Amino acid sequence: QVQLVESGGGSVQAGGSLRLSCAASGSIASIGDMGWYRQAPGKQREVVAGISRSGSTNYADSVKGRFAISRDYAKTTVYLQMNSLKPEDTAVYYCNVRRFYDKYDYWGQGTQVTVSS
View 1 (cartoon, rainbow, N blue to C red):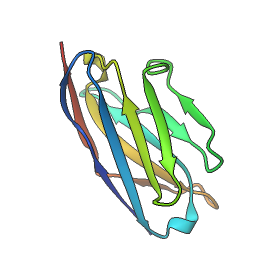
View 2: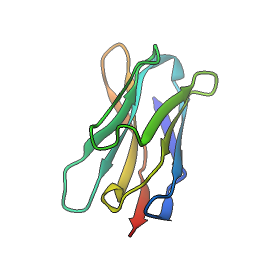
View 3: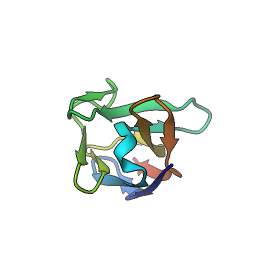
């Protein structure tokens, strides 16, 4: 089992920045890819960014150039630096960790990000 604890959400004005963190504990040796998803009211959950065990990253087109994902291997923590935030970035953000050997997904509890215009 892997436990995930998210932090760093909050409210910010458009153009501002926030940094999300997600710390993993438990069976950390099984962790493969890590990533962030978000879900806005009335919408489906969507991928925001991902980072592989080797450090390769990918981003949704809507956040490219504004968000940056990174991971700290020593602490098994994944971060999402969000800059130039827009009102449409408002959502609950979820950390995702995938077990490398069977692709099983673990999810964080979610953290609210609200961007006002």
